[in-house]
Length: 469
Image (cartoon, rainbow, N blue to C red; front, side, top):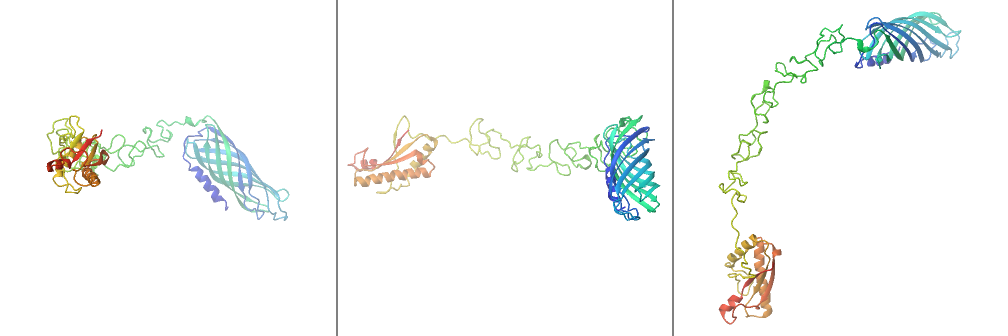
């Protein structure tokens, strides 16, 4: 008996497997062969060994649910000890001829669990030690698994009980587990012959709701479920958990007239424009407060107070690419290039070298006496040079420094170069690329006026730009 529970449990697990097709109808016959394992009782301390059994059976379905069968099986084993003779390892056979009644569940399915009860003619044959024949009862269950319309597998678990006499002289309870093959034939035969007009898996003869729509889930009587009570049957209902009282469409899903994802039953703003983002009440959002709803707003980050068009984008009345709220020149003619403020750029500065000129004396650029320090009045002239070089970026120049004839030649040469470098440094500080400018000191060479007069010497103390490209 200690092994009965796990065997019966395994049988129940098999019996609970989901059904997919059918098999076994009124008038069908089935035959089968099987093998398995037996766990005999102790037979008055003889302790027969657990061993393999085998057998054959034949049966008939009187209805799709009820059937009967006749079977014969043998379990050949040996005992650990014979209580009468004391001999060990006596060969022993347990034969059984049984007639059983079966109740078969799940009519028309591939997996058909069953329970069974029957009467058996049981024989114990242990050679010269013991030979008894007695009637016994058996009870069990199992499952038929139809692999085709005519062929399948069968799993059984049984408890057989027989009241043996003789040297045994007590009731013996044997546990059996079997696996076999089966063949079905007769006028029932093919599983597809069971009528099920509405295709809900419940045969017409048992179906209390024979006109169930295709796809609906039904109970064992063939009647459909509607768990959420919305009028759309389970299995067809694509939203099976709809709250009670909500209006639904033909799919069983809550109606959402404005398509914002919030059902009509809880939508506080039922006329929201299509595409607008909404809160959990179904009301539209306007993150930048420009009057155009999020989801429709093509420019959702518009600064507060900015005038926008119907798309939610800032207005640009003069089409210069600068929004009206930032445009400091809102009436710029169309096509005019503008700066970041929406204003046309100032006109270009005059070029330094006009008419093919190559040299230019920077008149008004002067230095402190005997120093390379620009006087303040020089900066106005140099700022004009900066503007021109900035507007004409392809111009390359040499900055040449000159002195008058007074003083030592070497001193004058170094002073002139330092003064030219001071001019270059100022221009670089104003943003002109240093690579566009070279520096050279010429000292007192190349005078342009008479060094014998103060006026001439002033003209010779000069800075010249020479175009190099």
